[in-house]
Image (cartoon, rainbow, N blue to C red; front, side):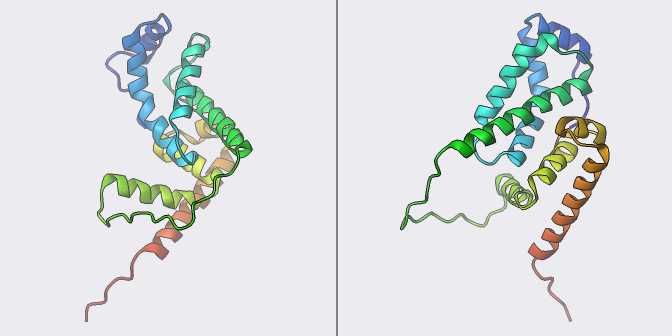
Length: 187
């Protein structure tokens, strides 16, 4: 994710949002929400709308106590998101398991490439990584955080973040090599 690209300086927008200016808060939401959703889709299995809502509720409740620039804000918001995702996972573990119904046919999907199917394929590949690798790669690549920011969000050292990124990217490269259809040899 690129740095703040709003029409007004981030600090001005943040001050106005703190005072209750809906347009300023909407500007922050338009800037932060898309990468937040992409990151949650990578890190959380299942429906993410409840987590999104909880994150934005926490942000609005605690906006007055935030201090820092746009990079600090992004790190703060993703730290909140990470905590909500962890809470959701704990809650889900305590819920009874639902089993599949025997004999129920699931309709097949057409093999048509679309942004949705490409996203699903990418998410399926990421799902094969460890949760730590997924989380770090999503923060670094999808959200665009620096190694230092990522380390602060996931509460690990910068070296650990670099190692997780490297191992995750290597695992993805192996998956692509295995999943790629054999090249046709032309005589």
